[in-house]
Image: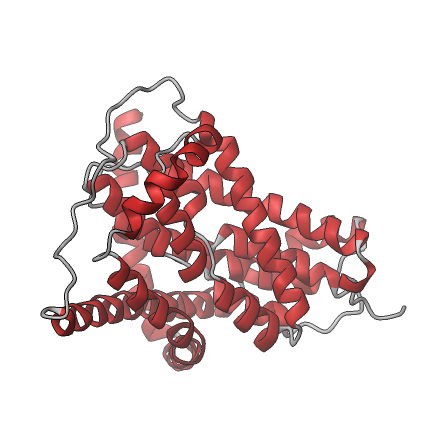
Length: 346
């Protein structure tokens, strides 16, 4: 029986890939439109938001910033998060730059023996976050048309990731390993002589990362289109509508939530297009989706960490937890501070 299950499990991915290819032909017209939408989202939202910060992150890797931060913040990072001080570099740049920069930096730190495997897994749970340009600019201003809500979502996002970091400080707590945090293995010494080549390399690496993200967005835009055309969302609505009716919550949010769980940007766009009087519900859902990040970003992180033996499981649990905690913080803020309540009069 066990052998049979293992054989079936090995065939799941090939079957899914074959099914995906067949559905590309079956829903050819809508898939093309979905791919165009994904490209539009990437060009108008992702590239302007992430590319400059990716380039900045690459350039900072050639400076002693990481070790300077590590030495200065060791006294905070170790007792609070049970990670080396140099992890602060991943945390700060992960916040500033957005997904998946934090994961990329943590993987580099581990590869350079600047943190242990379990320290890297702890770091990964709270350093890979959505950035301020995306949350405040794209989500707050562009999608919801309100910078105040964007700021609220960003603050709750950061508070939630800090809570996750504190919680996961106890992950593999008794495992003692030795890492070298005294120095960082820089690719080259930054100087005016090699500045041009370093900038060119930073741009190349950054564009490569952004193109990879664009590929994920297009792929998952097509997958979402397939799911929609296959009426799977209707089945999901059928299951969850009775539960939402108990709490007097509109069923219109079901599709955006599950879309966002698959791919973050598409889900948030769909969510922001809903017109309901109880607008705060949309902000709670957006807060959860931003904290969780979506399966698309999860696979982006997996593509980065798969080159090492870092386990992705703590990251998955951490992001689910961050989404829940961020939602709670958003709920409390909207109900405690009246100026955050944008609900229309009944």
